[in-house]
Image 1 (cartoon, helix red, strand yellow):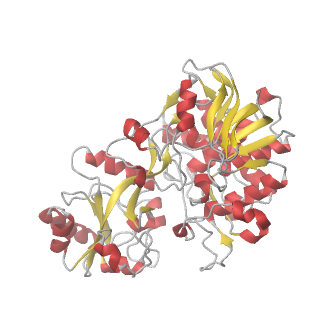
Image 2 (tube, rainbow, N blue to C red):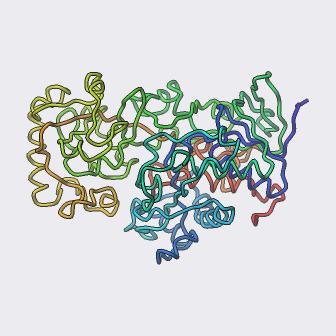
Image 3 (spheres, rainbow, N blue to C red):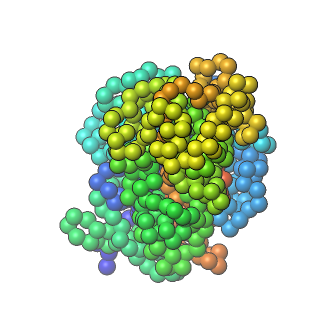
Length: 529
């Protein structure tokens, strides 16, 4: 017999798990959140915390009109045909619930703001928007959490910057106790969850699901005092994917692959994915991840995002050739590395910069204009007086690189890029150099010295997982639901297939799926909170 019993057990104390817990408590349910690590926050705390929530109440101040119908139209335009994981019902649930969740967060005093500079990834498609749908959490004074501040995982240092990591109008540097980005979102939700009576067990990994293929009836948890069984009417897996399991990566993801290339800061190992598969759960998209180009420095991966879209830089394969629009959004850029690698060695590729770029922009852990000697000695970044020397130092075809730079510089002189149209899209312009009126994304590489960093196809989490329905119920291979078992976010197969409609869709979908799970009509609950 189980030693504890709850109406709902949430596995994972990231944003989606905490939101589910708050919603369930407001519906009068007894809730336990179990978190495998010593701190709350999950992968959200270390992320930029952006949320794609169409038809939100903050758009009106920007003069943006939006609707659930337009959001659904856009999703269908980006995603195309439905699949077993990307059903019409799941798409409609996202479109219909996203605005409601934004209103619910605002009414719950989670201070959201529109990231004005960020458009949908394809704003010219039917239903797309050039602004207004991407939200971020306003900075939070950690001291407002009182003693609970020590329970909150900190943000990664590079996440305390612009481009949606904090609202752009705020001054830098920020006060010492200020949480921004995903840390601020989780901090607000943690504060409200504990205030609403949610029980939280930290450093308490779930090591098994109770029940069988017909129904999940609880979880087995390892605590410092030993293993305990917890009975539950409903178990929600908000436990992330498998990006830190090298074995599962090599089984499912394109090769080469490495857990060291993931930018998520929590040890998501896919153990509960494996447990659910053992109960007959269906899966999809296990070969996909939320791709993002990364560099490696000081023992971990750093995302290469806005740096790729700045002038005086380009990315080449080992033949010295460009092969995509470097300023495109992260998911497309990361996927481009694997696509290219099928024919030409492009893992790693190389970000090539002239000295103007290195002097002007943060790169991984290194501030603009400051490159530690030990980083050069370790080969994390290469510096050379000429492009010829740079090619030789990193192993790029010399003639290929020199020819590519000559061609690219010719494009830059005419403020364009006929090869890949870099700088032409709404998205590219959002990441460009807004201090450069002549060309916001394309600029000549000519100022010595020259720099190069290896670029790997990293990820911000895996995309495949358990197939769920519009109420986030985990489905069997025959399409029926496993009673009592729900999943959201990285634990579930993404509804977005191999695409990425906008910044913040992964976290936005996780919140929608978590909310749908705890308001499932089959539980006798109401959707209005």
